[in-house]
Length: 580
Ligand code: AMP
Image (cartoon, rainbow, N blue to C red; front, side):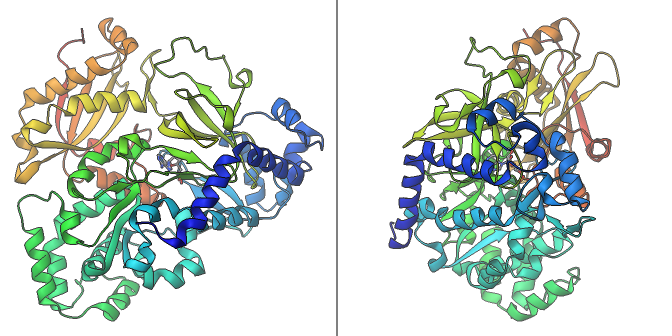
């Protein structure tokens, strides 16, 4: 379904990926020539701008290292501590959503890059799905958070909130999206979600794309719909908005759109009333061409469930980005979620790669500290090798570890393509063993396979290490849903005990050794009641995380979050004996 409008965009992607090396050198040259005189870089480069000196002298850092500089700018000192250009504001990065949001400086140049990406990022999608802007509207679930003002008077907001605040977005919103702006900025996310679903259903004949930023938000929307479809249909039938929607913005927006429509309400009711919700998205939004949301990384755990709901429609994850910089595009939007690779765009930042050990590479020797490990340039990464992403940006981050581990899956022209592996720092550890997000995901995938044939789906999980008794042990919180009306109380406890064993069998060698030696106690699964993970999400959102950018932590670190889950436990199961 090629359209002429995207040819320029595809050509640009060809040029960028073909000239990746030269563009990366220019990118670094530009960053250094602008910023070598800043307080931070002067300390390492003494005003020089050579690449070799940069590589030799500028340290690899984390957010914590740069935080004192960023905080000084937020507190009113001049931007040239870190970057020559004035800082115009900050993005609030959720990172893993586990800790406090980070403040990422933003400048005019940063916005210019964002605008540039906007001109070609949709091209790979248009090649397959046509120009959806011309075809109809998007039913996208979007949630803004209030901006924060720093002591310097500069504003801090999540990337998504900043986009929703842009005048171009607001002007185009009524034509391109089903959600009015008031529903996106509604202070109560549940009222906002109800209204966004309502408006998406009212305009269902126009909807050509359904989605949200992350897969978890799309699923939250579907679960909310499962609980509220009768009420939504009643509102559509009568043309009146439910009384519990008290937000005046939402009510005003509704008054402009809603009128009694019993025929539409009956159609929706018939679709939602069926026993199985398999393919419900395609049934409700019959003209939708695809579901768009990020479904890699921490989101891959949601793909099975999402594929069930969107059966017959492609699930498309089109980009990889963080608040620090836009990173890459998925050039094969139709590939399966497990095969998704992102091609890094060399004009977005200067990218370097810290080699990281992966399971397949026995010979890999990690140096004791990052300073001793050579960073690899974008075009020199090796297929099959895992790396931690390190970026230098036009907005004051130099050799900054984003915290993401990526694996090189191939090259497109001269630009490498990466599969997202995991967040670096999410691990469980009782003693010397280290269990990564990926280790955990694999073990959970093995164990939950026991539930599927019995008509149960694991919808959410997270973990923590319980050291309240010695030895400590791994705890998994599982939220389980019965298919077709089954209740998870019907689940045989023996199966859950088997899930505990299966998880232990699937964990890595060191875990198993420690477990056999009783350095680690039996793994425990705590089944929590339906809605527990929504309560967890609500908690993080109430603490300042943007609902649009929320990523459930793979490992719980906060006492309060733990209490939320623990207070909803309906069953506890332990592995009966150490794995073989
Ligand atoms: P934030 O700064 O709050 O926008 O979060 C950015 C983080 O989200 C990244 O560093 C990744 O860990 C994660 N992320 C963003 N895009 C993707 C993607 N396409 N696949 C997997 N994880 C992603």
